[in-house]
Image (tube, rainbow, N blue to C red; front, side):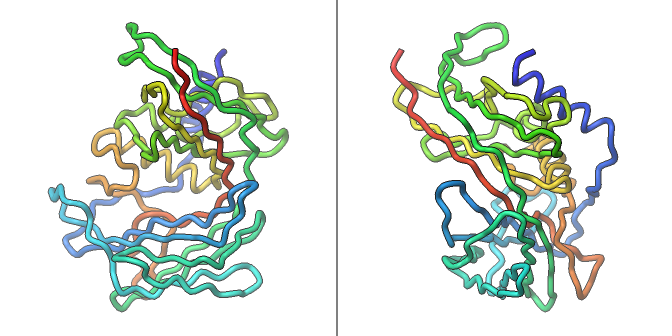
Length: 286
């Protein structure tokens, strides 16, 4: 069985054999806060640079980009009680250059916006390194719509530990995600069927053809179980709408950000913490 099929089968079994902990709601007319934030530790390249983006939901039939949430007060606190202010860098984008993340640390987000206080917590899980990235040329066929190179990776899944993964593939700096149900089993996965095994030749985004000379980067990101459920539902639902995984689909998926003042008016989106392994390369000439 190929790595791609093995990962896909694992994700399918995971999706049908357990109860998810996400809810689906239709947004009411009053805009809701949307949080897109992940505290990251990049292997071999630690940095204090962290970013959190805030926006608000638009109307049910509104196709315009969601409006930025400006004027919020954003703070992240680590497990030792150290607080990091995230000032607004541009409209709706908040950040710091001073939070150096660590595996095993819990990070708690506090933010104040439009009179409400929100909170979310995330434990930073480790991720195995990508051992290699290379390019496989696929010719057009009944199953391949566009010929070209696909980026593939090898890695070893740690044995005896439940691991959950998210993959991002950037080509020339663009994270292009086709809007189809396959994303829910290719871009997120749990290791139920390949625990402790070598995963060889896995193509996280096999629908994207890469032409010779283009730069590709794959980011292998750790997820919590709740994060896995959230992203699985997000990709699955987004197959019916935009190719942007952070756009808010019509039936919005609830994340982990709670409203401490008005619990029924929780925020959408998700706050996470993750270790990230990055591999990159340039597609060769044929």
